[in-house]
Length: 131
Image (cartoon, rainbow, N blue to C red; front, side):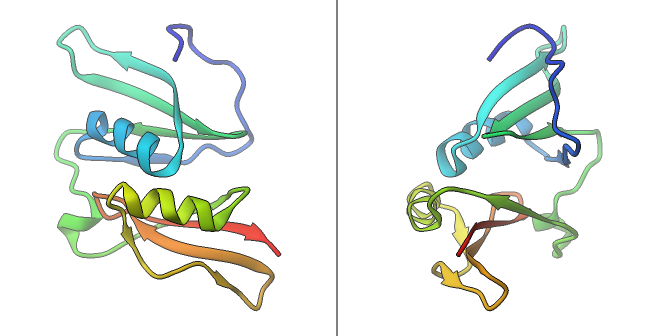
């Protein structure tokens, strides 16, 4: 991680709200292989803005006041679709980290091998590799 504000961004960077962004930094690193690239810590010690990367992809995260995550709302509202080099190894890593895995990796008729997972706050993720 760097203290410098990054200037290199892909054309699309999803911004994901979490109730506990600090906990999710560690979890996304362990379970999915993300790497922290920027973290703004406010004077009171709380997090203002976080950026994580996986390959060329960047996600941004924050925890706005009063936010309720999908787990507390009882519904998923969006899913992240992430390309990885080895879906089966990624599945093993996520499961070992305690992810709520929604089945084994499967070859899909639309040309990818994929599996789905929910993170601890209920956001849906799909990890895929073209066949």
